Length: 64
Image (cartoon, rainbow, N blue to C red):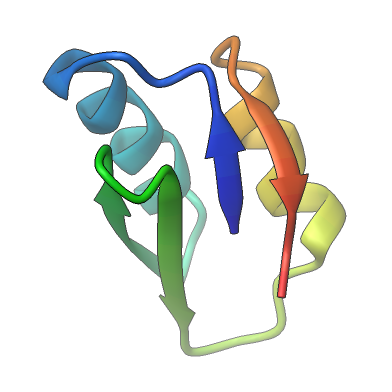
């Protein structure tokens, strides 16, 4: 997913923690690329992923 609004490693940690709190999800977040690569072992909706990131104050531009 493409994310805007991340400016530092604390932002990366915040997004990573938010996604990792979803049961079955694991995130690898890149500040340089402005994206999170999410792997999961069960069905997780795009809306759920978007909500946890945006609840932290960041904007999800797209999910592929």
